[in-house]
Structure formats: structure tokens, C-alpha cells
Image 1 (tube, protein in one colour):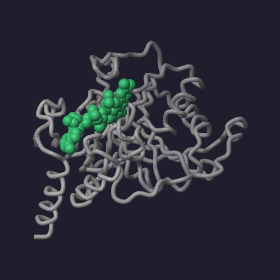
Image 2 (tube, helix red, strand yellow):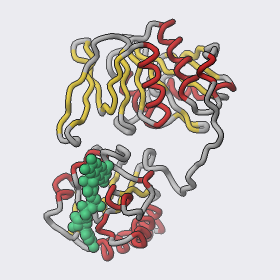
Image 3 (cartoon, protein in one colour):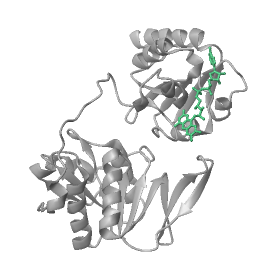
Image 4 (tube, protein in one colour):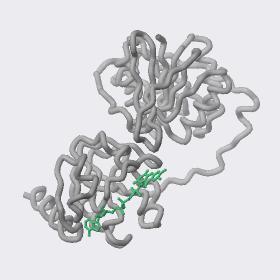
Length: 321
Ligand SMILES: Cc1cc2nc3c(=O)[nH]c(=O)nc-3n(C[C@H](O)[C@H](O)[C@H](O)COP(=O)(O)OP(=O)(O)OC[C@H]3O[C@@H](n4cnc5c(N)ncnc54)[C@H](O)[C@@H]3O)c2cc1C
């Protein structure tokens, strides 16, 4: 098995989701898992990948790769896969990674399994796990040819720092004419305080039980006191109460913080699949029969308007003392 993992970076950091995929790849039995980093001024990030299981990191460090556009990266990765004979290429899902994976599949005439949440090595055969039927069942998926491409839901795996170091190899970047046709005109960043929900160790999430957008301050205050991020259900983002970027679940983000506090959330299956791998799940809901209590570690049957401010106060007192 010769596995390559696409290591996406934002600014000066490798994305937690792609480091998670790298750690997973390193646990599948391939001792020589490699990573590819493509961008401008990114060579220094290669060392970081070694700590998460990469034996080798290919660095395509070139100003032509400054903008996060897919086609130039497809050129780089396609050439690398052909030259080095990689049989497996893994991606953590993102807008960029999904475009690259699709482009690479077309370029290499390769099979791409997407939306996977796990992968296992069964006697040398890789089997992907893909949720189906609104995430109520897992389907085993495979590949009929090499290279095999796989795109994993963001947050499916925790990065596991093993403390190793990677050999770094610089790549010459040669782009196809058609790959330079697109130009990045502008990039907008949403301003937000505190950690993003993908990276947060603690998430406090709000649902329709909050009663209105103005009551999200309850959730924000608790998240702030705990040093965590704010998440939301689809019901509330669809209602315009909170930004889409915070949606947790099947059509939102998959998260796995150490602590997930669900406030006024019923626990629909589509929400559950996005947060069920959290370390400790705490639910606050006034309905003792709400489905969320079936998969919570701790449950408070009560009104969010009463319980959440008290909890916030308690956290502040503890942190202050
Ligand atoms: C294809 C598809 C994809 C979907 N994708 C997602 C997804 O990615 N993420 C997602 O979240 N949903 C998703 N959904 C929607 C999902 O099915 C639910 O509708 C949604 O999760 C419900 O959100 P909620 O828990 O905020 O609201 P509700 O289901 O309305 O639950 C509100 C809860 O708050 C409780 N409550 C009310 N008042 C209070 C109070 N004062 N104090 C305490 N508790 C109170 C109620 O008892 C109730 O349990 C998807 C649906 C479909 C069909």
C-alpha cells in the first residue's frame, strides 16, 4: 500500500481535519504514509506533518499555488501519484479538497468514494464506511481499481501526535495551461471570536428550544466562559438565527470535541451524526423524552433560560477561584 494524504493548510497551520486523516492513514498498516502540501511559503509546515504520522512530506512550495484554487493542485498531485505510484489518495472534506479530489478522479480515471466517515484495512483490502439513508446505516464501499481516492467528512478522525519526523522532498511545480485559467479575485473571511467549531475542544450548541435568535447570547456566554465555540442545529440556521458556518450535523459539520453541550436541541438523527463522537455529551432540554437524552452522558431536564445562565455563572465562579 502506498498512501498519500492531501494536507490542507489555512494560513500557517495544517487543518486539523487533514491531520486526522493522516493519523488514520498511518494506522492502516502502511508504514510509509506520505503527505502533500501545496501552496506558497508552506515548506515549514512539512515538519508538523511528521509529528502526525507522515514518513515523507512532498512540499510543492510555489507562488503559483498561492491562491487556494483546485486545478493547479490537481496538476501537482496527479504528477506525484503517477511518478511515485501511489495507490491510495485520501482527503479531508472541504470546498477545496472536494474540488481537487473530483478533478484528480477525472484526471487519473480513478474511483472516488466521498462522504466517508471511516476506513478499515481488512486483510490488505481497504473498505470505506459511508453513512446512507439519512445517516441511519453505514454502507461498506470499495474500489475496483487503483489509485483509490477517498474524501472523508471533516472531523471524522482526531489527529494523533506520535512525535515522529518526516523526510521532506521539494517538488517542481509545472502547471498545465488550462489549470491557470482561473484567478482568485477576492477571499472573504468571516470574523469570529474564539476557536472554530472544527477545532474547538468544547462546543456549546443551541437549538430551537432557545426560542429566538436573541437568546443565542445564553449559549455564547456559556461558550465564552468555557473557552469553547458555538454550534447550532439546522433548524435554527435555516430560520436565520445563527450563521450556517456553525451548523452541526449531516448537512453541516462533523465535530468531535471533548465536551458538547446541547441546549434546547431535540437530538434528531441528522444532528446526532455530526456530534455523536464527542467525548462527553451534556443535554439541557425541558422534555424528559427528547431523543437527545438517549445518547447523552449527562442530562438536565429543565428550561434553558434558567439552567444555562446558572451554569455560566458557576463556570465563571470556578474559573475565577
Ligand atoms: C436531509 C436532512 C438533513 C438535515 N441535516 C441536519 C443537520 O445537518 N443538522 C441538524 O441539526 N439538523 C439537520 N436536519 C434537521 C433535523 O431533522 C431536525 O429538524 C433539527 O436538527 C431540529 O433542530 P432542533 O433540535 O433545534 O429543533 P427541534 O427539533 O424543534 O427541537 C427543539 C427542542 O428544544 C426543546 N425545548 C423547547 N423549549 C425549551 C426550553 N425552554 N428549554 C429547554 N428545551 C426546550 C424541545 O423539547 C425540543 O426537544 C436535517 C434534516 C434533513 C431532512
